[in-house]
Image 1 (spheres, one colour):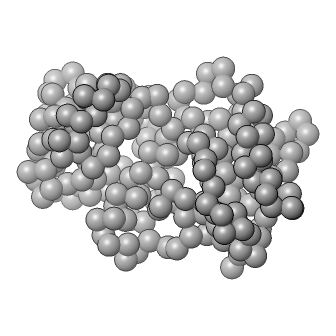
Image 2: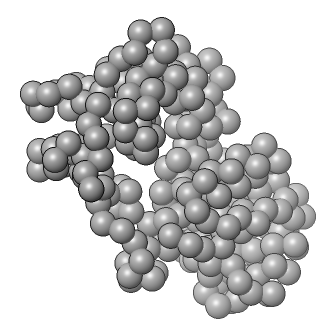
Length: 230
């Protein structure tokens, strides 16, 4: 899915991280730490969606959200450390299309971006679910849903990130470090040693299928056994 995303975030590491993930997903990304610069870019046009941190150093993030709505009603996903219910309601009442709190999974955020763009465009350009193992496993990233043998899987954000990462290259071995970096992004410190437990939980949810779906490569990491259907 093509599109231009403006990331407005005062933390440089998060800005750079999101730019990489968005570009990897085929989206064009512009970044800025300034709310005033964001308003200027919105006035110039050409922005399809904004990922907006509310805690900006120069302008209240809600003012930037108002500008996005005024400049062609550009959809906005709020990204913030404010995780209280009242803060969420306040952002949504001001016109946010979605609300993501820090710390977050960059993979999940990109999926939310794609889902908002897909919804606004009526789904005309979004491909259907990907199928693996002759239909045993199906993954619909736009809807953030996965099915095994026709059964909808209830996955945590981390389990979803693990599954979609391995499904992006079936058969390829992903190291534990790479899985952590793909799934958790900048929030990976000390997290690598726990990845095995998340894979274990994911396997348990896939256990209804009699065949192996995720294989362990000793000393390296994990891979998706099922091939992608053509």
